[in-house]
Amino acid sequence: MGFDHAYWQDRLDTLRARHHVPGATLAVLAGGELHELASGVLHRGTGVAATADSVFQAGSIAKVYTATLVLQLADAGLLDLDTRVADVLPGFAVADPDVTRGVTIGQLLTHTSGIAGDFTLDTGRGDDCLARYVAACAEAGQDCPPGTVISYSSTGYALLGRVVEVLTGRTWDAALRERVLEPLGLEHTMTLPEEALRFRTAMSHLGEPGAWPEPAPVWDLLPRSAGPSGRVLATAGDLVRFARAHLDGGTPVLSAGSAALMRSRAVECLDTWSFMAGAWGHGWALYDWDGVTGFGHDGAALGQFSYLRVVPGSGVAAALLTNGGRAGELFAGLFQELLGELAGVRMPGLFAPDPRPAEIEMGPLTGTYERAGVRITIIERDGRPRVRWQLTGGNAGFAAPIEADLVPVSDTVLAMPGLGPVAVPWLPLVFGTLPDGTPYVYTGMRAARKVG
Image (cartoon, rainbow, N blue to C red):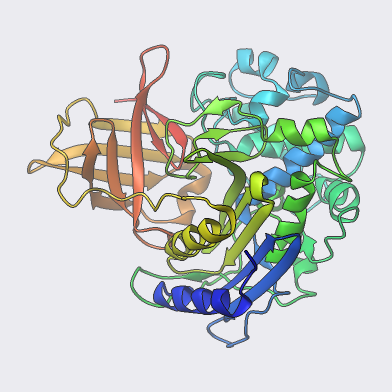
């Protein structure tokens, strides 16, 4: 089926406005051709229009670029998945000496290292920022023991970025440019804000649900050391061009074996809602849509939300970049229809509780749960579950504490309203038990152990 540009432009315009997303760009690979669309504005204050060549923050989609660099090093014989991080990263240490000695490259790639996932630290803008970050990781604790459950770790990908630097002799930024961006001809992809200023660049927007968000007071909050986990700046078209290389077997930046390994099923996800993924590979999130398999990744950066989906069986890839509002609802509405028509995919809707809450016993779920940067307290008040969500440590300045009523979904899942500048109306709290019997709760697919 051909790509009807006028129809999809109308759908993008309509859904973007409905969900108060200031600006969005969409790129779709279908039938071997790349189609690029844009809608809205890059900045509600200046009114500058979004165009197909506009650059947005792709957030955590940066992790797939870093994983690509790491698998390049595997192709060169410099490491493999079982290589211990300590063997390739001089001076590497985290708070747990056993993890320091034993954690592997494969565990970092698959988010199974258990290392505190949001160990946030600004180590400056210099080329030594990742080296300094790794030195500071000596204080990083564990969200869970290694190899037990998947727990999304941006810290792990910052460590992988430093591995890239040590083995290539280049900064992560330079290695990415020279080894991935230039070979793929990605001329509208970069890693540093000053590089983005050469192009039309989207401004972040923040605001409460149900109204148009306003321009954020700053463009971004991420330090340079977060680059390997969270800062690739790109057009939607360049994201799809990058995905096409993986769709085509990695050429010219990876071997076919390494490209396949990145999307090979490595670990199952108990929380199948936060990233809408049922499993994780060595870099890619993995999807199974009623028997149709795919891969991709999502990203978020101070009000900018990004989505990338690839359906190998039909040769379809699509990327959506946004700069605020209820972007998750725009994504779900648009991609359910888009992937359904072009790839025969039945993509599920967003997470939401049933209108009639489940009747559950709250006692086993109440208590305080902690992971690096976050404290979550679940209580029962007047017969209703309630949460207090507080950022701690290096994350403390990013947002004020949040308190909200919860809606029971099942004995192990509660629904939390998506308050403030989040992309979706509901967030899942998914409860489980580690192999040693310790209860934990997933929030954003990050495990927080029960401490009281």
